[in-house]
Amino acid sequence: MSGFKSASGYGGLESTPLAQIGYYNQIIAQAWERDFLPEITNTEIDERLTECNQTVQFIRQPKVGKWRKYEKNQELIANQLTPDGFTLGICNAAYQDIKIDKMDIKRACERWAAWEASFLESTYQSLTEMWRTWVLTAMVLEAAPENKGNNAGLRGDVMLGQPGAPLTVTPENVQRAFARLQRILRDRQRWEEGKMFVIIPTALKEVLSMSPYARADWMGDCVSCSMNIDGLLPKQLWGFNVIESTYAPTAVDQTGDLAYYIIAGHREAFAFAADIIEGRLVEPSRTFGVEYQMLAVWGGKAIYDDALAIGYWTFGE
Image 1 (cartoon, rainbow, N blue to C red):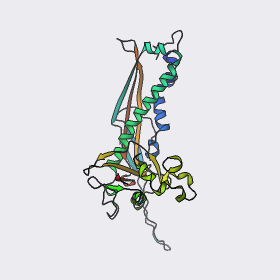
Image 2: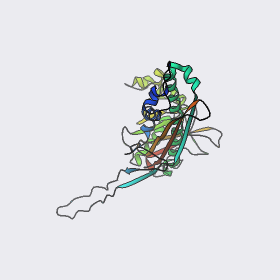
Image 3: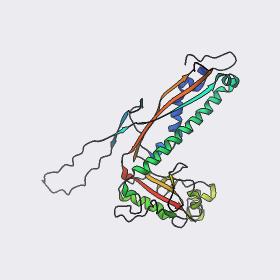
Image 4: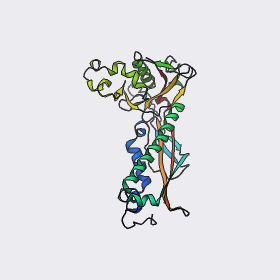
């Protein structure tokens, strides 16, 4: 960054907050602090990503066998445990190149730092939009086959909806629809209080607004849960932490209706690692400008595919 000196009368690039700390580090910090991805994925890795095609290690939680009945002096039978490692390849990459003319920097004068911070915000938004869409789509594809469709569950008797035959969710059956998602995960023994999530599209709000969830007088002591009071979704529905998102995958079904993939699961079911591994300020040789160039990499995969349940819903009145 030595090429960007302060000129008389205005702050140069070196004096701005982003240049001082490394602007790309600030972007990734915002992405993790403000996004919901860390709430629905396992992002715990021991090292920072530094290159594309890097691999990172996760360890699956082992399942210990059943307790055995004990009788005096009997020989013990050991349940052998072996660490089950999980390797995730970081094979996706995308770049951002933001060019700014130095005349615009001069005109901004003391307002330059604030404007620079504003495009940092825009860069953060576009980065997380890309990652959210990728993660939610991958969850739908990688969830266990028995945890989606109209023959879901251990006995194949749970209807969650599927292409060509979506589950129509109305104010009258919306509670039952969530109960089915919970049943799938409980039967799989993947339910853990406080660690379950559900991704809800904004379009579901209208259905919920006509359901018991919107009636303060039906909510007992939880008056603040009523959508009629603040217009917000409840923080929890059927034990799931609710995350409203416009990035839930959709499809125009064969029936002609717009269908939404409703993603529910354990927050550690899906591993995700992402970072901006390269960031630099470049002065083009043939123009008076500066370019902010960044390279982002990411990868993800289901660690426990049976800890994800997928609904395929349309909404009715």
